[in-house]
Image (cartoon, rainbow, N blue to C red; front, side):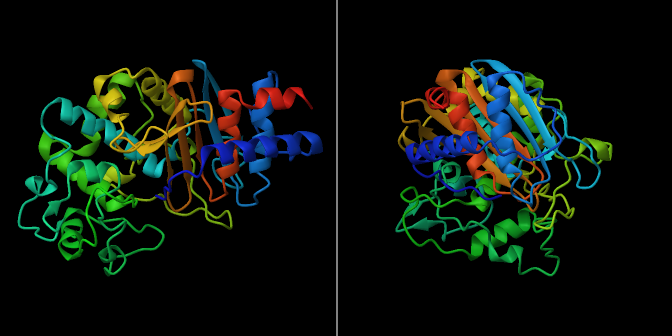
Length: 381
């Protein structure tokens, strides 16, 4: 569930434009199975980027959902499982990893509106037992700090990999509340919370526990009741055991071998959701339109600025033209996801993959395409 703060947006945009320019000049393409109709200019631009993505030999499957000025487009490439020749589709279920955290942020927004939680609350108000170590020089960790990654809580506690049941192919399986609490007791604060960004899966896992205890409901029930059902996101789930295997984008390692789906069901808030492009474009539209007060609240900056900051589990940026960007990405043992919303443009995109192929250039290029920056460049070629 890796997520790093995005590098300078302007530099990324320039690199994407340069990459597009080089590709259009070379005209080289790979032969990758796809449902891209190659009819419109958008189809062609997406195909150019997808073909470049598949130059990475680790690539297996790729599903893209694009919202451009409110209009939805879908593109699928490769295979849902290597060697099957089965093309993924808009309802194929992928692991989305840490993109789950954006849903957790919206749940927190709802809890704040319901006056069940306050951003400035000391997190120890929601924990049983004594945690004197969860403060530094008398300054406690607040709920705000959990959601914007400034809590100083360790990214992953050592007791995850030190336990006898640890499985490197499924590292969070059976890692539960009790182990998380033990990790909290053992950690030591090294500086004031709320001051320095440092990404933490454990912090968001703890936030999920606090939300579950506050509402006396499990995480997926909360997500279903407050987000999935209102948005009619019928593909999004944690448990996929009832699905036929053909519905699943099986994760792959660097050798394109199938590896286990990660089981994060005991601490789901940090990355347990699985979803499809059909559902995730609904999520993009809901965030662009701020269809609920909780969604709108999750977009408020709690650390940094609108140009480079954090909301409630949303990374917030600004394009060179000043447009707001809301984003989160995710990674598990053999899957990757990227989600970007451009509310002022009523646009955005989601990338879902079932391999470890590098998608960074694809992210940057799709951002250029979606916001229209590539148009004058392409017109000059």
